[in-house]
Length: 392
Image (cartoon, rainbow, N blue to C red; front, side, top):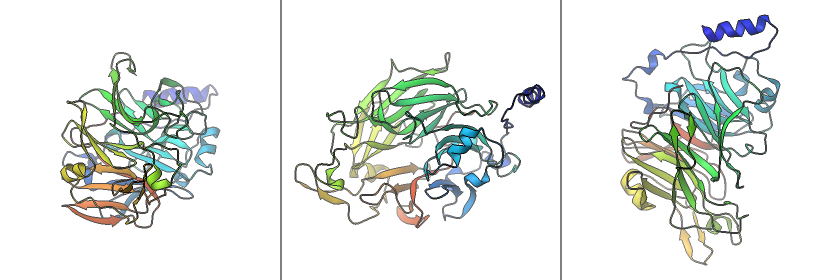
C-alpha cells in the first residue's frame, strides 16, 4: 500500500515513475509442492524465449519481450528490443514468484505469477548490459536485503561482480545505482548464494581466460562473506580455491588457441556442504568444510551423477603437448541436481557455444527434452534442499 501511495503522489506532482506492484506467495507454493518437477530453460532466438516446463518438455509458462506490455524507461526498452538473441541465464527467485535472467541485452527480474495474470510477466528490476562492464555478463544471483548480483564476466582486472538494489518497490530506471563493485575475479560464469555459510560463491578464473595476461589462468572459486549489518559482501575476507592445474583449450579448438579452461556452472549438492563445478574439460567436486577439491572427472559422475552420458561422439583431439585426449564431460554449460537423485544438464556441441537439447537423467537413465532448441542453460525451477535462496 505504501509503495502504491508514493507512486500516486509522484504522479500528482508530475514525476514519471514506472511502478510495479508487490506480489504475495501463491497456493502453488504450498510445502508439498515438488519444485524439481519444473525446469526453466532459456532459448536463443529472435526473440529469445524463457520457458518453464515439466520433465516431458511440456511448456507451462513462457516469456518473450512481446509479453512486456507495461511502460519501460527508454533505455531499458531499447535494450529489451536490441539485436541480442541471448537467453544466457535463468534462475528461481523470491520463493518461486520471480525469474532472474539474462535476456536479450538485459539482466532482469521478472514476475512468475501465472495464478495472478495482473502481475505475471512484469519486469520488476532491469539493467542494460550494453555497457563497458556488463556487455558480456553470463550470470546473476539474488542476495539478502533485496540485492541482486550480476557477474561482469570480463577479462580485465576491474571485472568481477556488481551488486544492485532490486526491490520491486523501486522505480525502474535506465541507470540503477551500483551498491557495490567487487573486482578481481575474471570470466565469472556461475554464482550461488550459500544461506548456511552466509556467503556468495562465484566461479571464474584468477587471470584472463582469453590469454591476454600472458600467464596461466586457473579455474577459481571465491567465497565472499555477507555482512548483514552493512548489507555488503566482504572482499577482504574472501575465500579463494583454485583448480590444481591450468589447461589450454587446444584439444577442442586447435593448436595455438590462446584460451585457458574456465569454470562454467557452480552447482550445490542437495543437503550437502559441497559444490560441483563444470570446467571446459570436465567436472570437479569441492567440499566446503574441507576447503578442497575432492573428486575430478569420472569420479564426480560416478558418485554424484550416475547416468551421465556424453551427448556427442566427437569430443576428442590432441592437446598442447601433442597427446591424444578424450573429453566426454567437456563444455557442460549448465547442470542441476535434484533431491530425488535426478539431474539435468546442457552440453554444448563440440566446437560450439551452446547445446541443442536438455539431457534429463532419472534413475540413471538419460533422455532428451527441448530437442532442437538452441540452449545455454536449463535449471530446476525450485529451491535446492539445503540451499535456499534469499527471499526478496
